[in-house]
Length: 417
Image (cartoon, rainbow, N blue to C red):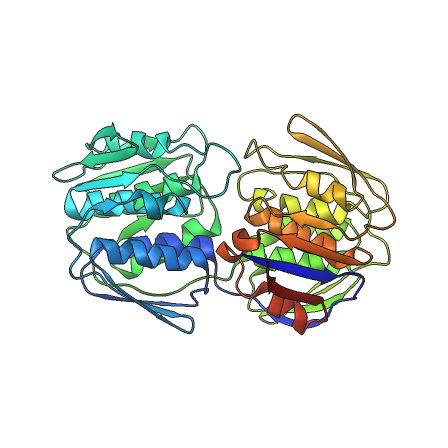
């Protein structure tokens, strides 16, 4: 098992490039199930979750090959319809194979999902949508079994916006008979990117990025060719790293339009943000100002940036109040930030952070993907040496993050425990 050792207090300066979005790549990889033939995906990040999805597709009968940042998936011979527990249990996004498998093969057997322990995140809304489209759903020994000769268009309303639920139903609907309306749909850029990839295959989709998506089913699709969007959460994480270290970073290959809520909050803290052609320059202030934030579905402040933002608020001037409205267990990083000296109190789904002058290095334990990123951000600004253990979470969502940080002046290394 690997660990990171960080000596803080270095002002980050230089240029960093953002990788492709994990949360866009995974559903698009699942979408390849929908059409026989060879699919080509560009800007694929080298991440553990991407490898897991590749192994899952191979288990279904697909060919999978990745070279540099290009993936080739041959889904000509998709014949198996089971996504087994040993793969699904390590990555929640595996559930995204459910809709495509039912749409193409008429049946799917998918283990109930796993992944980060940040809340229950049930898939009942996915199953409700498929049932409305005519699928019969049974639960057996921890597996969801869905069957339908051919799915039929339906009106699917989500009580709460769900990203993976929206994606699953949208993929199921592209081969369904008739028209499907997805109401109160998730509006995230990753949903839009999946819709764009599906349209490149011949799907008829309108409204992606809005609260109502309309899908007109077709009889067949062609293989996709698509370039995955940049990772907005990685972009936001590096912006926070610049802010907390008083740094001056140029971030390339990013899309600021996907980060409006984050950009506005960062500006409120005193961080200077100057858009450039194909990127952004981010400069941290002498002392950050405390700012309140509440996580919301897109286009609100993303839950995946809450932990990193909190780390920055630990040394901001004043008191900030951070409210988490998406996941119930997303304050697990707080105990570790306190080990660095942070002054944080929690009441229910609200954390109150009293900014202090300086964090101090300690030995920490990562608990989930974004918590891992927040501990790195905090360690970059902490006095002395910080060791972060159990960083395997980190490799699920950040491509070569320690190498990228070294390029811009961080003192960080990866070692075996």
